[in-house]
Amino acid sequence: MGLCPREFPVGAGGAEQAGAERKRGSGMVEVRERSWGAVHVVRPGIGVEVANGQDETFPGFVAGALEQVRGVPVGGDLVDAFAPDGDGAGFRCITDPGSGGGEGGAYHGVTLLFQQSVALRPRIGAAKPPAIETKAVGGRRDDGTRVFEAPWIPCVRLPGRPAEGSPVMLGEGREMHHDGVVNPDFAGKADFGLVVFHEMCHAYYDQAGAAGLMSGRAAEFEAAPGHRVADFQNYAEEILVCGLLQGKGLKYCENTYRRQKGLPPRPAYSAVGLKDDPDLAAFAWPSGGPDAPFKEWKAVLRELNFSTA
Ligand SMILES: [Zn+2]
Image (cartoon, rainbow, N blue to C red; front, side):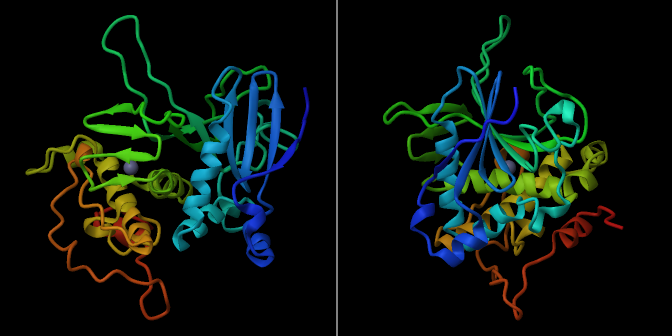
């Protein structure tokens, strides 16, 4: 037991200019090995959990996707937002030493975790394909048992990188390929940087407090006429994360990232009933500069009739 740090360079970190590298962190990975597996800290505040027997290439896959994210201006800022001694100073960490928090713990200083998602094959009922999703987790004790107590941290779950020519089915026409994800909600193939950025926006709005402000509104929204959306929180969260309807113009949304990367906007998130934004094509996206600031996420919540006081 105890901390067994091991360092190695990751991605293109070593090729960067020294100034940018100082700003973004060391580009080194710290591996915190435990009896159950390890937490690889691939960026400041960002950990990748690998249990014994899981795909050992998964941390490198995530680190590579994070390098793609950092290649887009809002992506670099979002990665930095999770650094516990930077923008993410107020973000939740696991603090209980018994849950892997605290000084020397496997999750010390981690404000965002990645885990590998696998297909579930229940004894009864249909098999469930692996998901790309963001959930909250409480870490693990050093004996490997999971912790189901607050404070939780957001956790992005996605399958390991498929081999070339062997795509993984995610359900409803969505497929994960060797080089990205195909989804009927958008044209072309989204690279893993874009997919990871989208999930990191969910994690950001959770850590920033938006998810907490939105919870508990599902029943109210279901009662509203003209809507067939099962879960208002999921719907509102995708408005923020995709950057559609009231969410257009946010800094941390998929459509600002797409715009900065020169990609067409994402027009829909069908699974939550989010589609048909009549103002999307003509929208004047802000640059984020002093004359064209990004929209504040709390303003979006107020337009959706949430109280942000
Ligand atoms: Zn989403």
